[in-house]
Length: 638
Image (cartoon, rainbow, N blue to C red; front, side, top):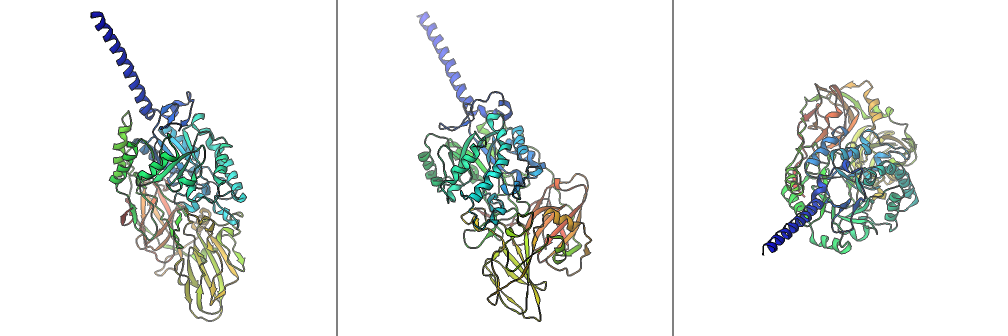
């Protein structure tokens, strides 16, 4: 009896030890990866991210992807680390980022991966902070970005068919990938880096014009050394046609739809489910309201996604800013709607890097999915409302034409992409001025060939606006030969939908006076690039009068004492235009809103005097004001 009891005790102890070991192994496999930093595994990597079972594994250890999108090209480089540390402190373990082809190759064969566009440095910084990386190299990225990230010089080819196997497109993609992929391939997981997956194109199921195209992009990645897990990304409808054999399908949505999840189980049984884009907020359009998605609703959906055992990536975790002329446009009807400059997106981390209720709710939720305590949240950066700047220097637009490239003399209008400027790459962004002469008044009709908005002048006197809604103006009668001018703005190219091939800008065809097409144009490219702004700033300006002429440039000086801080430019009393600080283009403003302020990063200022130049189309205040807080406009729920 005693021996039997001793034997039972021994057996029970042994069984208990085995059970504890099994439980420990399960716990390790389920959450151990969260405490494992990318840099710690460089010597012992045997298998990359695997999707052959119901859960992702990395080197055989279970990994739930808790991702967040934050784009290096929308964040001032000096703030990269701050944003990534805040991502890590929120409980995320993976950074996702797009790669904008149009910034990295602004002219054919002219590549830029330096400074603000140093993608390799950004990926290495993510590794340093302790984040894995899912890379989304396009070539198309959507992202409310001009032409979905495709360079406008592609449109110089009148037969161009974007996102297809049209030779003119695939040749350009091959050239870009020849430059891009060798930079990122060494940063893959199995080569010691933090990249655990790479996305093939983007939401192609919503475009789907060429059934050979996705296979071409997949091979373009594989043939250049991409070896990590490949993924596609689509909404529910796009999943039906956007996938590829041997490539993991992921889904995009904002509100959880059980039928969409069931569909994923049907097309991809016994494989992990990843919500590649869980839309944490939404984008804004000029003339609309500021879209918000309540924090409690966002967190509730993320909670349910995780409860169902799925992985998730928040698009966006931190939106940032569409600096310059890079914001895209929407064209669900025949009328183009342009995106605002801010890409705050109502994301968990605001445009300026502030914590929001979404951030705090998300952090509390994700803390339960980590074995270790989350890092402390980094301190917020100080912002300042600088003293208003007197904009007391002025230069009319007409006097700046001498600083532009040599104008084109053409019998008929030429769209901006096909102008012979920028070393043969055409004009990508900004404004184009078309001038001709008339000898009578009458009905001026655009024949719907204005892309996107034209201010019209007779002898430099404003007579009206032509755009998608207004296609006809009255030209007043007058004596003799008069100059008729069209200042045409590219408000942003469509970034989503099936009209990408139609995104040429400027005057894209004839305009007529009394039904007779106008002829003999002088065409100026006014892309307002840094070289143009610097030439402009170095010239002698005149003092502003009580009635300055428009359009025009206005100049003032912002005085900064000590270390510069982030701030917001407040455009009270200004109508529509662009703001430049020390030669940098902060982006467009427009009084119709919703956005009423522009984000100005402190690192773009310097202690002492800072040059401020504003291009204004029609109405200017005497001062330019600053605020410590943004004004993104009246809000409406998504």
